[in-house]
Image (cartoon, one colour):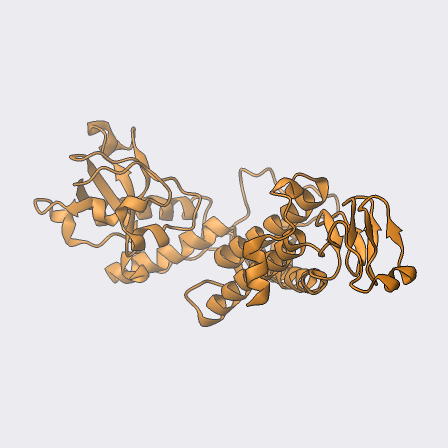
Length: 359
């Protein structure tokens, strides 16, 4: 409680000008960058928040940041404690054991020293630290030491997140390379299986570029010369497939997407903000973690939704008749509460692709 009160009083705070120094600027910049990147990395790539481990991990990251900043600002603003100007011992005879500071016009108390940077006599002075732009001494010794302890521990946690993220990405990358795929082609293959299962078709999709050997697939990407095999336009395919097996499947999926899309009418304007505050707390906090764009909506417009989350939908804005032919379109995410299904369209009986999985 005493420490908290000292923070509120800012006993030795020389306003906020202590922050205007290269030490605090660099220190706070490093803390901000490491903490922000670790949190973003943890949420987007490594450990999803909807899992127990992900929630605990994220809370720990926030906890490190809060404790590091608390002790840092405590060490900076509470300060070390200065010997009062004009101070002298209660017993006048004790002055014979003390040094006299001409700058402070006072005697130096036991364990105190004059700091040229602070231009004051500091109680139990340890050193003047440029990273907090203040001295380390009597009042802030514990806070400064805790900052030095917590900062490396927080960095170790952040480094663990970065390493695991890179390991996860490397594992996924090598997995698809050994199957001679790209990330997009893996997604196309998954959608092919979903399409066949959805319509209960008597067909099997075979990925055409998997050569059946991990070593042969590996050599298509990594060569001794550093130059990839082939010309990038035509590729060797496995038996029973041809050059256009994958593109034929893509055309089928695009046609299927148009059939399974749902027409919505816009009932509320939407500015296109990434995290709109005026569309509800749940919409704000469940904004899709993706670089895909948001689209502005105006009341009365129409949207063809192709996939969705619980509070968000993704689709194409119907601009004019040329949209039907794929000539003109604007697509992106928008809040679900801004639209309503059009009851007159037969296609509204279908759910947007991916919506069933994301509920």
